[in-house]
Image (tube, rainbow, N blue to C red; front, side, top):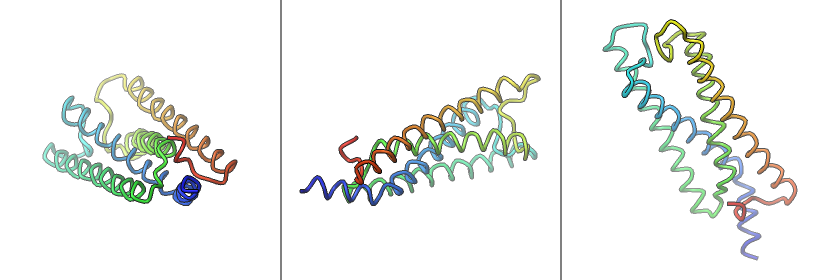
Length: 165
């Protein structure tokens, strides 16, 4: 009896599980981008169309954005766990979708269309762009498979997946 109510609760919160994962994925990949490519390797700043000082400020704002997204996601996870409605597999699907979507958005919109910055300022940028965008698509595909699996599970049982963790 208790398991059934937990599963029904989880089903009611499946969208929240997915969105908290997406938010966490966005925050995580933004944090890794900022830490690795901006701070450790010094390959670029978030905004490279001005002075270095402006670039550093833009990096700080980007870093703050990544942490706000991550912390907001973790508050959602804490609420889901409190309600016994946290669905780990669906959450991971959201993490991969969010991380991949943000990276693909960064690679196409910010790098190529808006030209805010490039991954690296070298002569042959194509290799970097391909690795960046292909890895983003792979993350989206992995996430989409997990989301589709959990959606099928939800539809077949009419319940959530707390027992699927």
